[in-house]
Length: 263
Image (cartoon, rainbow, N blue to C red; front, side, top):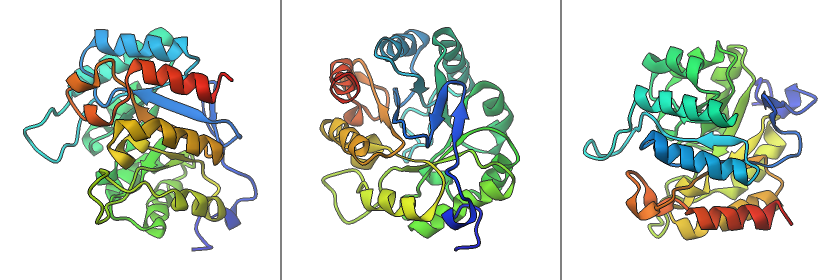
């Protein structure tokens, strides 16, 4: 693996991923927050207001939802993208959303600041190659069963195309454990420090599937000096249209921010 573009040995300096006034891999800790899914303009506007009030700069929200069951909420699609784009511009927030396929690439390039590749698409090599030909920052989530090497090779598809603006996201892997949704592999985060020059963040919402664990893992990631975390926030998690069980509420979000960044 030492001959890969993604490998630390082939680049002297860390790769900085920049979007307007947000930079990953410069020693700062970036918290990406927002709902699992865009549900309405009013709902997203309220969350964006909360983020800005607490000094946040990044807003995540699902628009096209790749769900295990075809009977669960599938997202608002293009309408959701338009809402996210409008709210992001209103509050000058950097927006993040997951792309479902190559079909939506032009729309995401135009409307979304950071394109997220979810766990199901980590091995969608046609999509990765296409993203490599763009100049968009990409969050590449680890596949549920992917080894660290397979994850880095997925990133290589993007870098090979000329786009080095890649953020690696550890979002938990599938193990025999059933108490948590996945097993958040913090050892992989440490390993990547030695293996790659790319920034690394964690997703404790998907990594645990338990809202009561999210803030603690963000604090751990901050202590470990990772490059950030992406979390789910909802005003009423119990009424969320998707994955409310892993979202923290507004009160907990403010407590987390005040404890971690506003000491």
